[in-house]
Length: 275
Image (cartoon, rainbow, N blue to C red; front, side):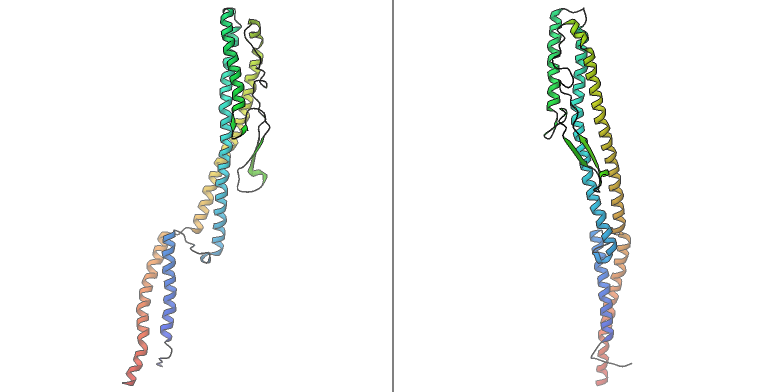
């Protein structure tokens, strides 16, 4: 076996192997600290690209869910106003039926008419004051809304809404009605029934949209869950595996240091030939 002191090949080899072991130790520590299998893109370039794409998709789906919730909020505000208007319409009909009876005096009918007028004014006020931001929901403004409820840009990812519903006093044909006269009180009952029916139709339309938004939210929740799970399988660290890798690498690191000490001691044997 030749003995050389100019180049310690054994030491160089051990140093190179020890450097690789140090990299494994550092990578395992970083993986355990971050909880991610892919610490840098070089660990798994393809997996990293897919994981980042899934991350962006999750962000988009989460934003889409918030958009759907805004649409639901708009409808809930409209439904709140419609519900009170429906209560008013039912009370108006009750007052009209009462005023159409011969069993009350003209004075009592006058008091009923006062309540009737106040309630018709209140119904009109609700229609004009029910707003979502600056948009009036129950005045038939025709304002259009488009809610993006998907991660993609195609038309299937949007829900459109047009504020065509008008439940103001004029549109409901209750403005100017009176029950101060017995015959008139009986004659307006069909108008009140038509108003109640119109409110029911408007509420049904909003209800159908609310159901659609809710189904969209449920679907988005499922997509977010699935995309997060897919990303987790790609990028998240297996703690048991990384712990095992760290332990093995640390043992090899200690052995490498010990072997390096032996390799560095080999040239000293040349001194024995000079003594």
